[in-house]
Length: 337
Ligand SMILES: [Zn+2]
Ligand SMILES: [Zn+2]
Image (cartoon, rainbow, N blue to C red; front, side, top):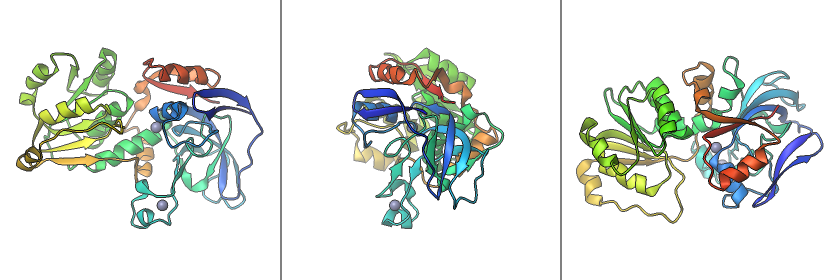
């Protein structure tokens, strides 16, 4: 069978290997669609916690084609979304219900073989069945779970004005969650690219603003330039500085990007005090995978419009190299089988 292998940083290829055999408590999945994510690029570039060699892809859907001897809740033929994060359930974090900060986690596509492979073994407890939605939509299970965890930290009140910084796949999933799950009807979204903002309009944005030199002037024309809920999905600390300039009193800020580890935020503690701001971080997800699967399968969230490019497994190494070189192509999805 064919799989993508990153054997060391900056070295990625398609390789032929033997079919894996599922251990007792695992299932053998035939991946159908998998998304390329920033984490895959970080693993390729050698600046993430990946172990090498590794087959990337932690965002995928597929079909179960074999089950281990002790597997009881999943059967051959089930359509599944894989939760890539394998938590230990033994550490202090796990035992206090905070699975996302597990001290001994492993992850499909990061520290164990992932979805860019014709076949992959995953623990039974990490697959979630779905029935109605497309395999393409189902491949958004992991990023949507991350988004729903971040969203669960926001205290929504009717009529609040939301601004989302960044209209990439993650920013747009936030937009869909704000609108379709939490019922927000005043959502502004900011991005550098017109194409992303066009997709944001299709996804239900009320106002779109291009991030050029006139950004702040344009924002001041919307809701007097102040927003109750601000979500950063850019990972850019300059954007975060601008975000706080436009956060209303009593506002909530969700910092959702993966920031440069050396970046610093210049923020007045007095402003946090006098404005009664709440500032929240968000790392992966806790018990949110189930909700993500339900939101996709019930078509509350229809993420297919976020796909910028569909490619084959054979094209994947080249596309990952190009993205690492800075080429922008929107969310890329790989048709694996
Ligand atoms: Zn991801
Ligand atoms: Zn743990």
